[in-house]
Length: 492
Image (tube, rainbow, N blue to C red; front, side):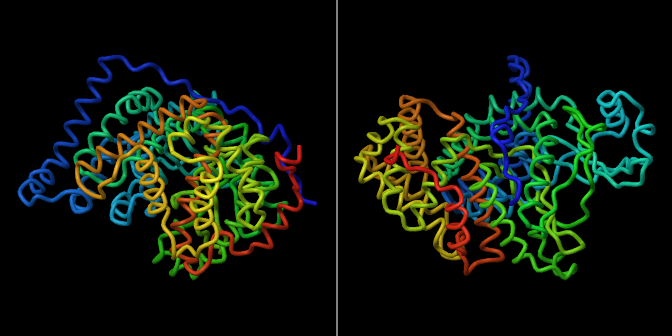
C-alpha cells in the first residue's frame, strides 16, 4: 500500500513572509513608474482606439501585446500575475493568454556578484566551497527568483533557486497598487475580465507570501517526491532538495533538463508525446488530492518540463494545496456528486452555505435547492465534458450573469457600461461573502488553488486531450473515493 500523507504532512503551517507596509514615498515612486510604463506601452493603443472607436474585445485584442510588455517591464508581481493569464486562456481568452506567454519565464538577470553575495550570506560559505562549479548565467529568470545551474563536489548537477534581492518590499508595494490599477484597466477596455481579475488577485496575495520563503518548497519536494513515486506514477519526476545547501532565500535541488510542455515544436523534436504524460499528471493530481489531501498549487506550463528521457518533470513547488479535514471532505463530496451520488449535491450546497454564509446565498437570490442545481450546472461540465467542449471562462460569465440578475442588473456583454456593471456585481458578492464569514479562509484558499489548477488543466486538455474530460476514467476516481468512504454530513 503506497504511503499516504499524514495529518502533519497535510496540515503543516507554511512559513509566510510578512510584507513590510509600503511607505507613501515607495507607493509614489512605484506608482509613477507604473504610470510611465503604461502610458508608454498603452498610450498609442488608446489613441488609436479613440480614433477608431474600438472597445471591449477589439480593444483588448489590440492592447494584449503592449499590456504584456508593460507587465514584463514592471516585473515582480506583475509578471507573476501574467503567468496566471498566460496559463488560463479559458478564463482570460486566447489572444490575451498568448500575448502573456513570455511571462512564464521572464525577468531581468541579477548581476552575478549580487548572486554570489546572496548565496554566500544564506549558506555561510563561499560559492566555490559550496559548489564545484556555478554557472554565472541564469537558466531561469522568473518573477520572484532566478535559477542558476551548478554542480556539487560529488558530481551531481543541481539547480540553485535564489530569491531576487528586495523582492518582499517590491511585492508589498505592487499588491497595494494592483487592485485599483486593474479596476482602471477593466474600465478602460470594457472587457469581460473584471470578476476573474479581482478574484485571482485575492489569491495571489496569499500565494506570493508563501513563495517568498523557499523552505516551503524544500518541504514540499520532500513530501511529494516519495508520494508520487510510491503511487506508481513513474513518468513523473519531482526534483530532490539538497537541505544542507538550502534556506529561506536559496534552494538547491536536482537539475531537470527539458522543455516546457506546451513548446510543441521542441516536444516534436524530442519525439515525446505529451498526451500520456498529461493523462498521468491528472491521475496523480486526483490520487494525491483524494487520498492525501495535498496537491501542486501552481502547475502552469512553465512548471511542467518534457524531459529528454521521455518523462515529465514537475517543478516549482513553492505553492501547494493542503486540504484540511473539512475542505478535503468538501472535495470528496463534489466528486461523489459528479459520479452519480445525488444526495452529495445537498452536502456540497451545505458546505458552501456554511463556509460563505447565508448572506451570499441570499445575495444570489436562491434557496438551498436552487443553489444545489446552480452548483451542479457549474461543476458537472468542468469535470465531465471533454476539454474541447467547455470553457471555464464562459461558465464564470454565466455565474456572473446569474448573480447580476439576482441583484436586478442586466449585464451588457461589451463596453464600459458592462465593465462597470461587473465591478458592481463583484463588490456585492464580495461584501456578502465577507458578511457571511470572510474571504480567504483556509477553506477558501484551498478552493482558490483548486480552481486555478483546473484552469491550467483546461489548457493542457485542449492541447493534448481535447476529446477527453478531466474525469475520463470515472472508475479510477470512484475507486479512490471507495478507499476514503467519508461520511456525509447527513450520516453524522
